[in-house]
Image (cartoon, rainbow, N blue to C red):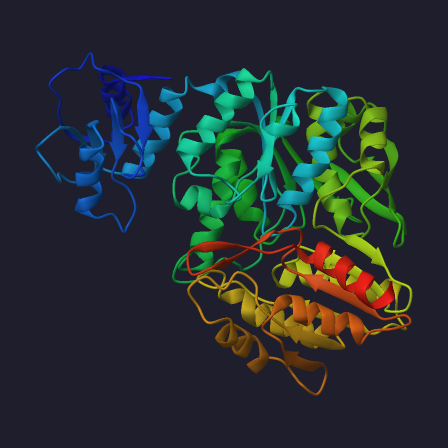
Length: 509
């Protein structure tokens, strides 16, 4: 991999990012790219990025043999430099060039939404890997899959990685024979320019509700929505949940860069002004059966049949909308309906509605539901399926981000739960006791019994041991995550399913 400084200058000028340059040799070809000053910078280009960047980071990069740096202001005259209007945009564009623009060799489908991104991405990934074996990659909140071998799969640290890592992993995908990539695109990916300059073959907008609003994320809901809708502007074909909040804004964004023929809308139980409708036929704790009906001429052309019935292996009728988005994308990519149907029957998403049966301590569900919308959908479904059961929830909220989730958790626990234990979930630099207190203060204690147990494993143990018969225990918000993010460190954590199974083994044998 390499980058000619001459090409870098042309790219920055083309995007109106270059402020000034001081380059001794435009024909220099760097073979290293980095924004971490601790790394070896030999014959490399170093990016000074981030609100917390310090001049000493560049000094360290120069000591580590950086040849040139990119920055929004001049820090040093000791080496060549490119001064730009926005370092994060420059990083995205030049990383793409450094790794040989791998996106041009991939068919990329991206999904955004407050809830459902991971589930929808896994549904489509499962469909495509059956249709195109060993040719499909996945960038999700849970896993990064960059090739067909076991060693090509690893855990993600961000929903959408930093642009440099994103293009690095895309290059790995291409080199490993991957032709199709399914990925989640978070609002932060647009806020921080991680996907700046990327155009997607298909973009799916699932939903939006207030979330990720706080001092370290989006200052307002309007900013959150603006970032979310960018996926519509930057995709060739658009798939939109007709029932999303702010539909008119999302649809208008889609229309900015596409004709009606390339925009597909879907909805549940709604026929008017949509292309596909979803109707639930049967839903229980084993599967979900629904019809998927073409409601417009372009939908009938795509589906080649007015209606199909699908069986979804992942329980919960709220997952039918996620499946709908994946079905449309798969059909647009030419996948046969038989393959779609067979894949959805066996679809599995790590940390999503994992079902653990017990001998005498109720039924346990592990789910990543991590905001009001997703938790409300989950608990509403369980209460409909188990109207006589007590619903008991173990949940926490992360530190340093998603502050609005805390009030949302309080609201949904008041509305849907019978009992709750508040606990730790990625506290970051905040005190988990303070986070739990903020949730607890907003709960109506006349409607739900609440206590706080900060040790998450102990909280799960206490809830399981105190449950019996028809009780429903929900371990929420963390899913299959094997770390607790604490004070800048990823502290190993067994994951909720592992903890629950070990506790059951201890108490039930």
